[in-house]
Image (cartoon, rainbow, N blue to C red):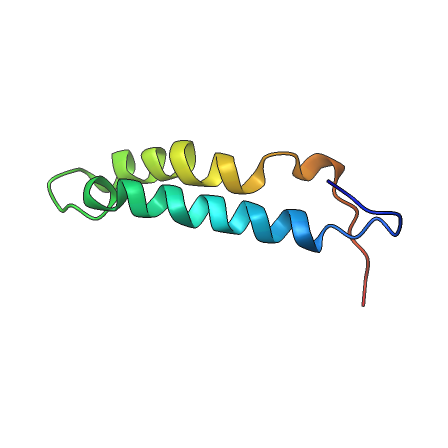
Amino acid sequence: MINSTNDYIHEITIRIEKARANFNKMRRVLCTRDLKLELTVRLARCYVSSILFYGMESWTLNAT
């Protein structure tokens, strides 16, 4: 959600919190040494990165 000044800070904060929560749910699987690194990376992209970056195509980036 954006406000009148197109400030995405709140949305980004929510996305980070959701991605962190999902990582913590998957921590046992993602941190195991029994899986190959390639599979671990694919799982992290699927279950963590997808939540973090959802909707970022519409975020406005400004140089500060």
